[in-house]
Length: 225
Image (cartoon, rainbow, N blue to C red):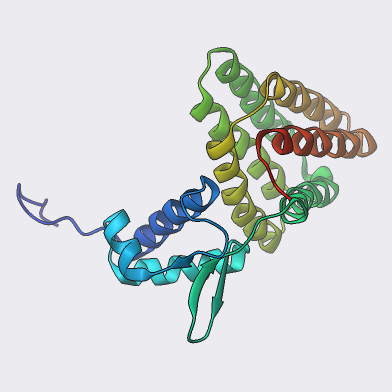
């Protein structure tokens, strides 16, 4: 296959365009760029983000599935009003999926898998200490994705990954409170130790406490009814 020449138009694959459109609209909603009940018009979105209408239409359907957008026949798409219940349910589901995964996957936890989690936890702690916020967020995603992958349930992994897109968007938009990143680093280390010992009761307790701490921290960063 010949390489594109200078001046050739590079066309982004359709799937990537939809993912990009979804991320841009999602983060604009969470940042307050679009208010609750506001109409999301394809033409205006295309102008704002420099994207074609097709991926934007698909992006709005994906965001409807995430609960951020409501689509009504003959009315189009509007921004849903976010509340504490929505955010709480999202994070609770994320926690429950990880707990189910470690229960399913503990028998298949090899030394290599434990070492993978341990390395990611150490890399996360290092990113936090050096102030690499973007790197820390990505390492957090990779660590928790590995937990769910090791559970061996592909459908659970798919739901988890979709929810994590929302969680990542919340964190990019609102950040963390003082000490919460270091708290996450400590929790990762404790969790790896519990899994190494096959101590499921302690591992679940860590994830439950982490969820409570994360919710308390996030609600302190944002103002929701």
